[in-house]
Length: 249
Picture 1 (spheres, rainbow, N blue to C red):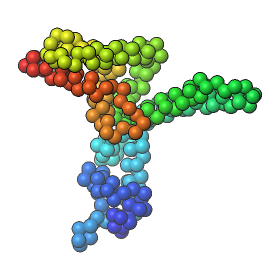
Picture 2 (picture 1 turned 180 degrees about the horizontal axis):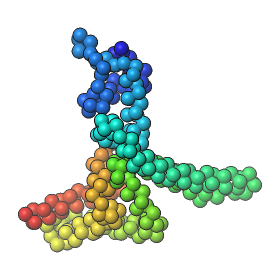
Picture 3 (picture 1 turned 90 degrees about the horizontal axis):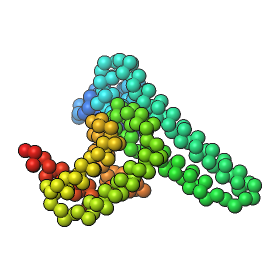
Picture 4 (picture 1 turned 180 degrees about the vertical axis):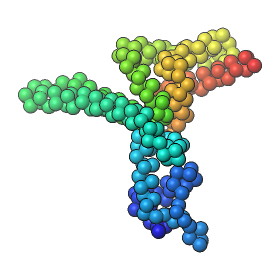
C-alpha cells in the first residue's frame, strides 16, 4: 500500500490530481490509514493508466468516468476517430513545414540569396499548428470533429473575406461606442456580429459553446496569443445583446 505522495511519485502525477480524481469518482483509494489518509495499491496504477490514455485521446473527465463505469470499449471509437483526424491534420501541417524547410535549405546550399517569404511560410505553418492545438482543448469530442470538418469548407479566399468583414465591423463598432445599445443602429451591428460568428459555428451549439468557453478563459491563453477581438468591441456587443433581451421580455 502506498500513501498518496508515494503513489503520485510512482505514477508521475501530483497528489492534487489524485484528490481530484477521487472527488470525481474516477480513481478511489483502495483504503485509508487510521488518520484518514488515502492509500493506494500498485494495481491502482492500471486504472490510472487508463485514465491517462483516455484523457490524451481528448475525452473530458466526466466522459472518462462513464466509459470506465460501463467498461464499454465501443465508447472509445469516437474518441479514437477524433484523435486520428487531429493527428492526420497535424502530420499534414508538419509535412508542409518540413517541405518548406528543405526548400529553404536547398536555396542556402546553392549560395543563392535566402527567400525570406519562404521562412515566413514556415513560421506561419508552425504558428497555425500551435494555435490549433491549444484552441481545440475548449471543445468536446463531438464539437472538435465538427470543427475539423468545417475546416474543409474554409478556403483562403473565404478567410480573407471574413477577416475583412470583421475588420470593418470592429471599425463601425468603435465609431458607435456612444450609441444607445437598444438603438436600431447598435442592434444592426450585433446582427452583423452574430452572423459572422455563425459562419464559424455553422449554427452548431457545441461549437458555439466551445467558442464561448475559449473567450471566457482569455487569462489562461498562451502569452503570445493575443485576442483577435478588441475587448471594447466585445463589451459593446454584450451590452447590445443584453438590451435586446430586455426588449424581447
